Length: 335
Image (cartoon, rainbow, N blue to C red):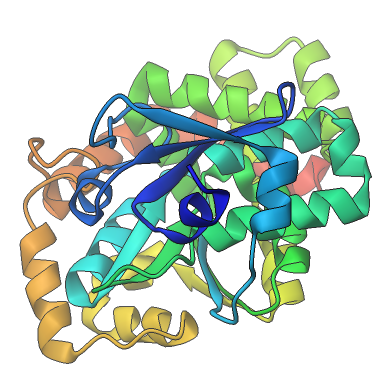
């Protein structure tokens, strides 16, 4: 297929960048499939068929034609409500959010591992401009934006450099809420966070020495876990702080979004250069109410989550307090 068609038609989704074979892979999808998919990381099928079309990277770079539309990114900490935010924005306006596309995870991993192309600034920027362009391709009824994975937080500074017009917001929450959210999620969520920490360390995290000291200390298992999670949190905070400052972006916190969504959503939309009518916001909030943002079949209420959070705080209050004290005394961070 003509590379120009693959690169310009939004129905062709960039599924993978393979720099070993120097190929880009595309699958045919639809606006409805992208709307319904919780994530675009391969766990959910979005293809209209099993057909995958590949194009050589060199040919794609030669065929790519940049445009003047802005890049719209929702950067975020893990487990802080970003999927809910993206679904509500979609429901409240003519927008489509690419949620955690696998390609950005691939590129973040390549950068962390020091792949040669990431060290060649001209080639790296050309590749990132092409990839960003795939999330700007115009759908007939929707403006596109992208919510990268936390894994791609290490890539944010490069994406900002590659973009000619970046509209960036971040969604965050405080460190105590982060620890509770990890414990609430159980084994799978905790394993994800520890894998994320390893990724950050591969990307030359500033907290490498602190991780080594935690690992070498004779700590009870829960205290070791919580201190490592604090480091995961602080690494994400640093990366988001840098991105917001560089891109002149806007920071939002989950507590405001969850407690005052009707007020917060228009501010987020404005920062992303989107318009969300008030009536549409209320309709979108009503649509999302009562079920989990990542799994529509799973029931969810804020009261249930608050009750579970209270249980965790009661059970692990002393451990969490000790970890937060360690954060202040050993990492030198304010409460």
